[in-house]
Length: 122
Image 1 (cartoon, one colour):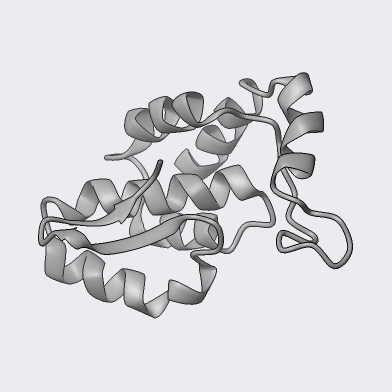
Image 2 (cartoon, helix red, strand yellow; image 1 turned 180 degrees about the horizontal axis):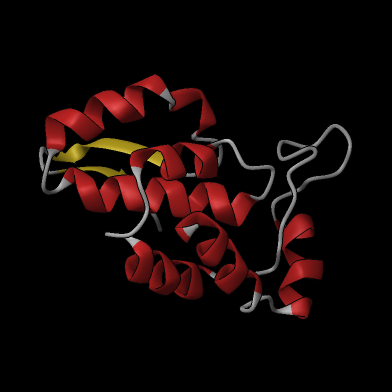
């Protein structure tokens, strides 16, 4: 149920201008590097705010579903939650993230800056 609530709240933060702009910025057209990626139109600060609110309510299975979502913002939220949880249980979430690495997409994998942080969302 929490996953549904999370997705619903995410959709209440849609910015129609960003929904139009983001596919162009991430080059989602045919033959471009982001081909086929879909955007709701939610900006990163809003994604992070909502993800933090649901961090303790969403299960690892919920996060896994986010990682495999068709929507860019939901996948981003999933990786953001992993990076947040990694700080408390790095071995578990390191293995979890390795298992789903192919889903990383346009988020940057960063294990060089700190042994305490494996993902960077800039």
